[in-house]
Structure formats: structure tokens, C-alpha cells
Image 1: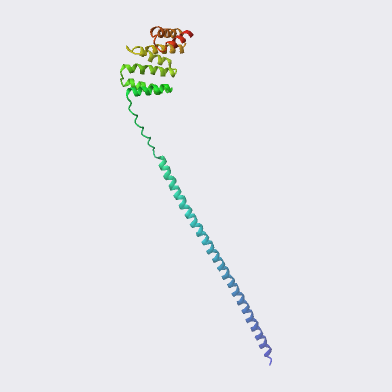
Image 2 (image 1 turned 120 degrees about the vertical axis):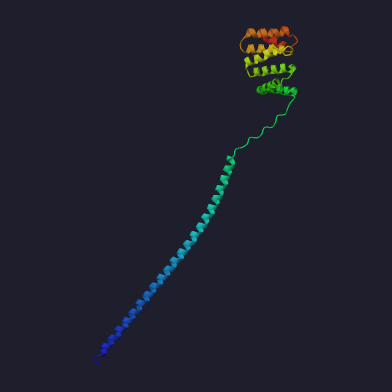
Length: 217
């Protein structure tokens, strides 16, 4: 009968030990469950981040393709702009007869396009036009040079007109020589030229003007 208290104590201790073991097991399982839950949450988060990164990568790839296409287009335009541009071929000038060219020169002179007029009349002279037209070309070259205030050069042209044996421009040439001398301040020579027009070429259209200018000197 003395063993019964010992048996009761042993039974109680065994019960308590089993209870403690069950509580620890429950806690361990609960910790494992929480760990698995946390791992699943981290895995879900990683999968979400991975999906977001894939979307960003796809967007960047699309943007990169667009930029490459734009660069290629710009390079093509630069290459096209760098090509040497061939100047347009000048249209062939219409071939004019001597009289048509002469009239064109007079028109240029009347429009005060003196350089154009000089070029036209010089072309006619270089073509070897007959004297009946050559003296007029020489005269209008002188008039054009006078219009450009190149008096010394103009005088050479008028003096050349005077060298023609037959010309209707001698009176005009003497008058313009007077104008050139007057413009250069040589009144004596200017008077001499105007006097010659009045006395030697009384039917010339410039006689009246020659008298007026002669009288003012």
C-alpha cells in the first residue's frame, strides 16, 4: 500500500510531460505554418515584381526600336542632304538676228541696264556686223559707259565712232564728247565739241541741246 503515492506521482508527472510535449508541438507547427505563409507571401511578391520588370523591359525594348527607326530615318535624310546638288542646266539662249539683238541692247539701255546693254553691243561687234550697224553699237556702248559715269572709257568709244568713214552718229558722238568733257570739268573742250555739233551738223537732233549747254559754259 505504500507504493500507491509513488504511482500517483509518476502518473501525474507523465501526464504533465505529455501535455507539455503537445503544447510545444502545437507551437512548432504554428511557427512552421507562419513561416510557410511568409514564404508564400515573399514568393508572390517576387512573382509580382518579376512581372512588373518584364513589362518595363518590354516597354523599353519597344521604345528602343522606335528610337533606332528614328535614327535610321535621320541618317537617311542626312545622307540625302550631303549629296552634291547638281546645278540646274542653264536654258540655251535664243539665237537672235543682228537687228533683234541690237533692239534688245537698246531696250536694256533705255531700262538703264547698262552692263547688259554693253554686253549685247560688244557681242554684236565681235560677230563682225556690218559697219552700218557697228558704228551704232560703238556709240551705245559709249552712252552706256557715260550712264555708269565712266567718262574716260566712254570717250574712247565716241572717238572710235568718229573713225568710221560713213556714219550718222558723228554729230551725236561730238555732243557726247562735250558731255564727257563737261562732266570732267574741262569747259573749254566741252565748248569746242558743242560748237562743232552746231556748226558742222546743223540738221542733227542734238543741235538745240548743244546750243543750250554751250551757252551755259
